[in-house]
Length: 581
Ligand code: HEM
Image 1 (cartoon, rainbow, N blue to C red):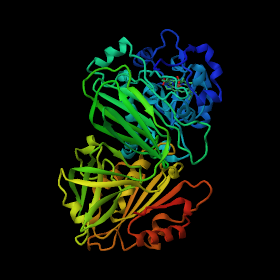
Image 2 (tube, rainbow, N blue to C red):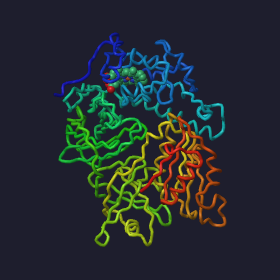
Image 3 (cartoon, rainbow, N blue to C red):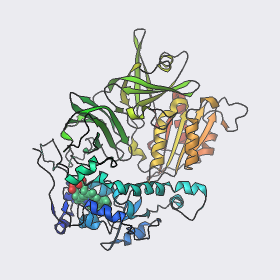
Image 4 (tube, helix red, strand yellow):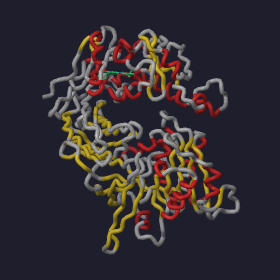
């Protein structure tokens, strides 16, 4: 049942994989020539040899220039806005040089993602980085313009700093040892890797190499031929381990905006993933015992969900265990979970940030979606909606390791639920249900300018979108403009975070508008109105290829007023999302 693995064939015989079939079923691993293993590639990377072919100095590359580097003696490709010189990597590519050459001279992001989105290309090619693929924007040039001495441009060159870090991680490249996968055949849902080699075993056990082997059990339970828009997206998964942790990654697809949860039940690790109204379950019978706490993280752009569990006993496993992928079923109703309060902090004079952890295991709410808090008050059920606030907002807390849901709760003295919620203490329990919402992250796929219009606690769904936009590289966000309405200065939530972020990145603009400002307030005053938006947005022209989008959230009246104004300002319905609790 668990026999391995991939079809090995000499590199010279790999050219026939240049077909659609190799994209849909890309199990075409090649036997590498002696001296071309991953360890040899790491050694070459560390030898000091210039693998960039441009002297190691990063510079922007235009698509036209990229297209000229398309021969086996001089091959470049771009992935997610970065251009790499792959000439030296060709004989080391486990899929064979011919396969890799399919991406030469072009933006190979889609091709790469179709074949093996899990491959850690940016570490593997860290020493081959030529520079950013130059977009038609002046900003993009500035980003890597080393001749511009302004401190701002230094800061904006951050990708190169990050790249430096990635370069350093080459030393630890044993972390991304070529995984071995089991060929998935019809009706065979269980998968398991092959034993790690001796060299890998010793690498795993060496204390200074935290991550060690990656053994993959990738699969798609959905037939690729089913392309109806209402069908579940294909799902892949793989795994990686250290001697103390097991991490399962589930790939739901680019901008799929998944929700999910994970828990350990009767020795099984159960992972539930919801996308687009479909629910899939992965049931893993681990090779040995796992223990809590589990950690759950979502990468918004790629749609990857990462679940990390602790091993009860430190050891190196041969595989992650038996994985059973359940068939996709329609999400029928939201889940209700009991949560424990882990931390309570203040984010303004009347608003608390509650960090709560579902007792059964971590839960992820899709970006822009919300949960409901339930409480019985005098015999009837009282419900309020909250959009969880992601990491990095409000004062730093220690709940990150518990994958907490963080809710910003404003206290209304005459409210039914908020006085109770803001009085909760660490250890108390609350009941949540969810996720709810219809926000589609896909709508931001080509967006370069995002306008966010929020009032009061209506800021919460915007926070995740701000982080998402700022982190994107393809397309790179040009501008995210938040227009934030509050009563007084003291009511502005997350002010410090905003100020810091706007200082760090001048693509983020924030305009505060106060309806009851103090006499010392020099900013905008009043309520949402036409002249204000004209001044801030100008006239927007919607066409077939819109690269702008606007989101609104606040009290119902505010949201409707905002909708009318946005339409008056040229936004089509398709370019607006109104968050409604
Ligand atoms: C964009 C054009 C590319 C194509 C068409 C391509 C194709 C393939 C194919 C067909 C395989 C064998 C798949 C299998 O074993 O299931 C493979 C494996 C692999 N490729 Fe690529 N590849 C490309 C780019 C890259 C790049 C840029 C890198 C990173 C440096 C890379 C790294 C790998 C690795 C590490 C494997 C082994 C993956 C595994 O065992 O899971 N490939 N590739």
